[in-house]
Length: 290
Image (cartoon, rainbow, N blue to C red; front, side, top):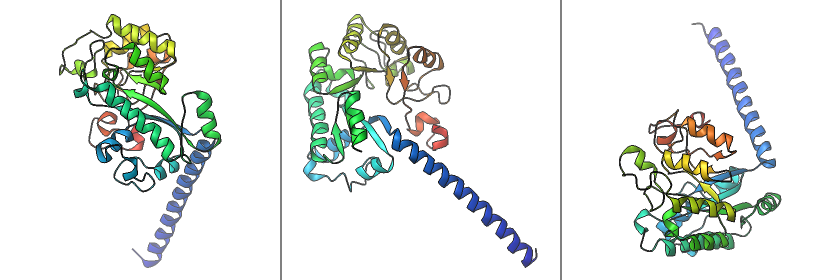
């Protein structure tokens, strides 16, 4: 290959790379422009659990501006144009029937304290109006989701108390059955069915959540539970962090027939970015998510 031809080829490649960079930058600029007017609302974030696990909920020992060993910190939220965040008040299944209510209250408390500790960044809200005001003031609208029905200890009174403390969704199960609803492991054979979906009390929980205005979250539940809940609920439901079963046949994901019912009921599925749920492999990228 001649030197002249080599330089010509390098010149062409340079032009192509520059064009690609221009397209990428243009797409990024357009995405950021859109998100300035319609900020991202993320359905599920486990940072409160990290605060417990790493710092025993002692906010004096952590700086969310510089924290770098978790998926979330304040600079990442701001760079991603996150305008609304549901923080998960999660406690392990092992607390079921023991101290689940107390420990869930502590996780709700740390979310409220996070808002108090960083008032220029977070504002705890419990309504659509609150979210809109947070958008206007360029703060992260912080909402609370309780992850797992074991947290209410089969008590509608506890459910109502959580609502009064700002909880606006509850995931019906985590990775364990509770006395009134079955979890996703039933579909793998790892857990025996307990309620064959929703029990009668489970149906009363759904209707009370509807009455309160607390969103029903079907992430982590069995397919039978999904269908029972979609039939019973008088309000749209969400999957706060689940992906598509047709693309990755993991039992944490949502099958097509359920997705069609969710569409009919005007519900919402928020995609889980966890590699194993996106591609059923250890590797995934944003194109797979899209």
